[in-house]
Image (cartoon, rainbow, N blue to C red; front, side, top):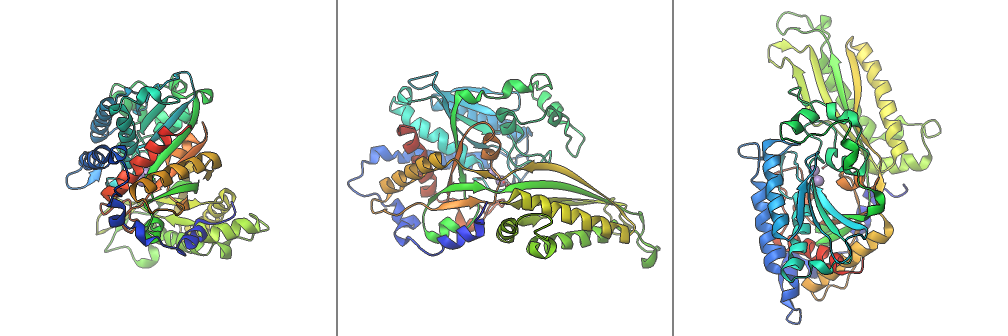
Length: 475
Ligand code: GLV
Ligand code: MN
Ligand code: MN
């Protein structure tokens, strides 16, 4: 992949559309038929549903819904009731995905799938995932209240995927990968921190996924026309250019690692510094190494050995690495830990470059561990290659987004930006089944994976209108 997403971002900082600021968008032009804008469904009800869903949490005081947790199950039922309210036929599959389908005028035609995820990170915002589900249901409801669902040119199915964040099992896309047919049967045996497996948590919710029946969830590619996903941008570009919507060109690939460092557990007051095999300080050195490698990949890769010059250049702009979770054992202030486990999340637009970084990092990791006399083990928990969105579907989503913005603010005559996504999305898994395209909605300050995540009511409306415009197009 040539151009890094940082470069794309820089391009879009060059122009601004002040007339499309949040206040301008909310002012309807007199000549627009307000009926076709469905503000009560696409804005007011959609926003109130997002707030309602944002309260469905396993935690007190912050939002947390991980795969098949009690709150996730409640959220699934709530979403299902909204799908039924929109006139859709609904079901929940064996991986906990919630489906709602309208057959339209030609039930045997290839279906358009629209979706996003119902799970969240810990201390999440309420728009990540939920916006895509709610805006799709709202757009179908807008058709339903006018008696137009039966006129859809092809079946349309909304899917609320059960796992995109991968927080509970460290393996993302459990729901969407099953539908795409790329979830290995072994995934049913992944275990969470309490030792429960994916299969067990499904069974405790009366969902009987087995190695023998998992393949039944896979959709026949011949039955599917394409997949569209609305998602918050989770970055600052749309806000900077003053445009509520953008479309996505491609999604960065990602790898998640679990690194276990084992040393010698001991007394904090009695073991001399020179005699320690302390996994915590080894982990600290490994984390700083990761930062160095990812900040300056060109210093760590010789491009003739690992990857092409273009990969190194792409990495220099798009590579991001994060340690988001660290657990020492036994975790007490007066104990030198015996073991430290931490996660590494690595993303880049260039898959070969990402592999080269993992190779270089692990090589250096083992040197550090030897020098510090601790043992280190690296497990790959998740891999997803970079995905390019389908150009034709992207053009359709762009035109739907522009139609929506034009309806809302008649003077809009610009082009919606084309962005790269550093965040992962269910579209990555579904790209193994069918062509994919995404619409991004502006979010305040580009903040996401935080309770500060926010989308303006009018931008929720714009997202719903864009989906509606797609549904009303020839597709
Ligand atoms: C999902 O939000 C991810 O990109 O980690
Ligand atoms: Mn997320
Ligand atoms: Mn998401």
